[in-house]
Image 1: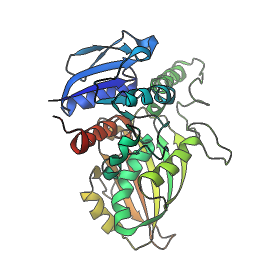
Image 2 (image 1 turned 90 degrees about the vertical axis):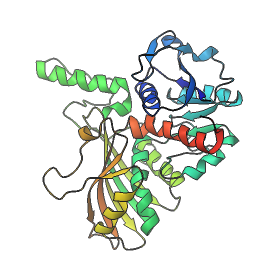
Image 3 (image 1 turned 60 degrees about the horizontal axis):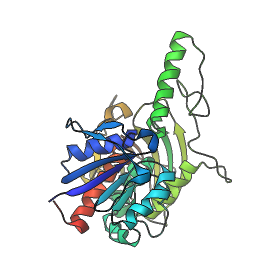
Amino acid sequence: MGYRVAFVGATGNVGREMMQILAEREFPCDEVTAVASSRSTGTEVEFGDTGRMLKCKNIEHFDFTGYDIALFSAGGGPAMEYAPKAAAQGCVVIDNSSYWRMDPDVPLIVPEVNPDAIDGYSKKNIIANPNCSTAQLVVALKPLHDAATIKRVVVSTYQSVSGAGKAGMDELFEQSRAIFVGDPVEAKKFTKQIAFNLIPQIDVFLDDGYTKEEWKMTVETKKILDPKIKLTATCVRVPVFVGHSEAVSIEFEKELSAAEAQEILREAPGVMLVDKREDGGYITPIECVGDGATYISRVRDDPTVENGLNLWCVSDNLRKGAALNAVQIAELLGRRHLKKG
């Protein structure tokens, strides 16, 4: 016996990726339904590579009664309005937006990091999926924190345009083409030209000078991993289509050498260590696309602090940063609570 699953936001990048991954991993489904906004009602989307086409239903009139799980990737507005309705109708919501992440009654889950936290899902019948840049970071930090207790993290991100959705990917393509053919370059989705450029702003600015993306990384890491960890972030949008990268500096309470960290990371769940100290002996964003692992490279001692390490972290933001993590949450929920399949 399988589950009845609804995909909310099925026409977007992450929604399509969720369907792809659910099909790839052979998640036990008796029924799958695509749900979208009124403007996308009737649009057909493929369920993975199965050849099975799903016609999108209008979320405004959709009844979640009888559905076991709803995978939301429709943004904060629909999550605020429709997730409680779905939850009240007995369907467990796994939401990819930022809206529910910091609600104390909503678990924020990365299955490799804090699986036990999912047991609190029944308070609201909603589970939150973390920010894409946070997800890969905590997968890398968790085994090191267990070994030597992290005090402080300084992270600089290099985030691909797919983190801003299809519009972000289209803008990079259109601007790159315009530059090559001599047409004028127009910034629409981003605050400045993204093609052949870097933008040190993701999301809006807050009063303290940090952006909301940087704030998310800080508070989400604390909620998922340990509230005692101090973290500061600088988040940068880069002209890469898919794949987020992070340069991470970590300060520990206990001594942990680079060699010891490499051994720990080599065995850590969800981590792939590729760390050869030679030309090309590391992973770049283009090499992680389509993979669910969080890749770690360039692990080295940081001589500027007493117990410090630096590392490079890369992951496919559409998969581990969003869709795969949501499906892994669904699998964890099934194993621990729903007991079907």
